[in-house]
Amino acid sequence: MKGQSYLVTGGGSGIGEATAEQLIALGAHVTICGRRAENITQVAARLGDRCLAVTADVTQAEDRADLVYQALAHGGGLDGLVSNAGNMYRAPIAEFDQDRLLDIFNHNVISGMMLSQLVVPALAARQGSIVFLGSIHTRRAFPGAAPYAATKAALQTLTQVMAAELGAQKVRVNCVIPGAVMTQINDRAGLGSTEDLAIRMTAIAPMHALGRIGQPMEVAEAIVFLLQSNWTTGALFDVDGGLGLGLTAL
Image 1 (tube, rainbow, N blue to C red):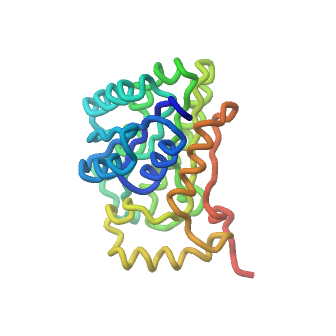
Image 2: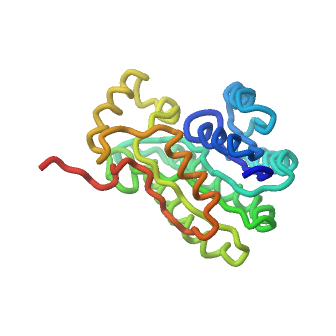
């Protein structure tokens, strides 16, 4: 991937950071963004000069435009977008809040759609690709997770419609569907302390066919594969350790 250029949103931690690390290791130029300047600056410093950190909120049109401008300048073009930035909102049906529902769809779905609109011309020039991040929540029904699950289901359908629409421009669109992975999105969602989350992840591990939760780098491997796979588009690629299989004890 030497000489190629990628934009990874939400690159300050977790799967986004791991994806940027793999792309840099393969020789690419990478632009990462996030709302927390300290996080992305630290990641870029660790990964070196080929990683550019841009503080940006992808829900804001001006930030998106500046982000794309800087990514194109940094990499001399663009070969791929990894639309990884997102947030989590969980609530039982009786407690749905309309403003928070609109906010989570704006973060997880609309921002990625609008960012895709901006980068398609650059991607078409290089026959590049877009990778969205889905979720195991569309494979397994977890009570109380309807708001978050609905956004990820929207992304998965969006992936296939965009793949059909952009195929004529030789732009590929795919979606990775991770299983349980410990990332900062869990902390930001206010689902409990770090210790509580570790207990939850330990409890969910046996539900995976492989008997453990995943690591960010393992999901990043799948993202990098899809960025390079020139005859794969519209794919919903499960990377979940078998959690989506619905494993039950006999």
